[in-house]
Image (cartoon, rainbow, N blue to C red; front, side, top):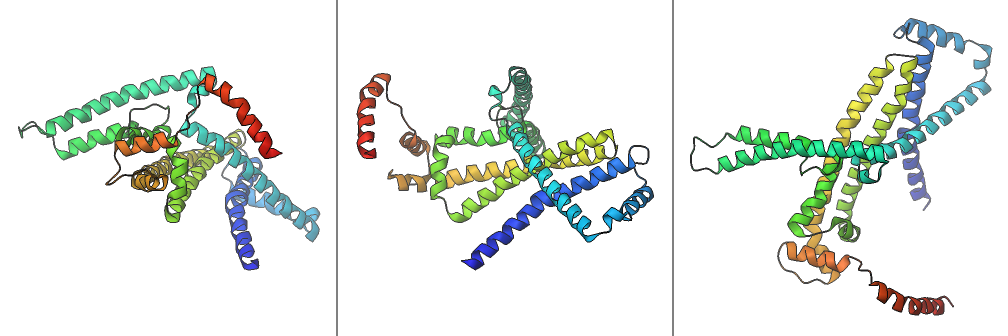
Length: 327
């Protein structure tokens, strides 16, 4: 037990150091450089070294006690800034996935709705171009059939907008929502209803893969939060714009990659293990998953509320039964 607790503590310390302290320490270092140099001497490394050396040579910084206090303050400040970045990362994730954009404030949801409509128009045009190339490919006339490069190009142009018809204002939100659309269309599976039960029957290795993909998405959105935290340094040090821009570009790329990986794993797991879940539920089925099986699973797992009359009739009896059990 002591060995297990020791390993657990070691892993927690490593995660605390890598996710909070080190990024926070980098943030504090940029803050010190920006405030020390300013816009006029933004890239003067000699001036930076002179001022840091001058501070280190003061009497307050020479004692061991003051150095320990300074180090502790830096670690605490770095960890605190890391916690702020984690909190902002949660907000950035909600904005990137935009699952609840219809419940955003009225002016914000209006902007999101315009974005959705604009993306829908672009997607309709791109999908029509792909479908035209697809139909031409099946033509018996070889002169009409487009090249494979043309078909792939039209498909990529459509998928850059969204893999399914957009219903959210962001690419990442639509990529994750596409899993729900495809499973319902192909297998009549309601992912929101089925997934919590699916999670309990899938193998541990698959569960680990999905967890890692989800953590990668959280880390990517946290990187976007760090980019926002670096933005205020523009008032003191113009190179901060380069740092914030590079972080935001990297965050955008990583969010898309992580979302695509996570969505792919969700869809693949649901398709592969639908029959496993059906067996655990006692639903008889032979062969691969089909719409009939998906409908049966969803219907079995979906909670059905009673009618208002039934609620009034059964409510008091259930309450008395609960009182008996509690007594």
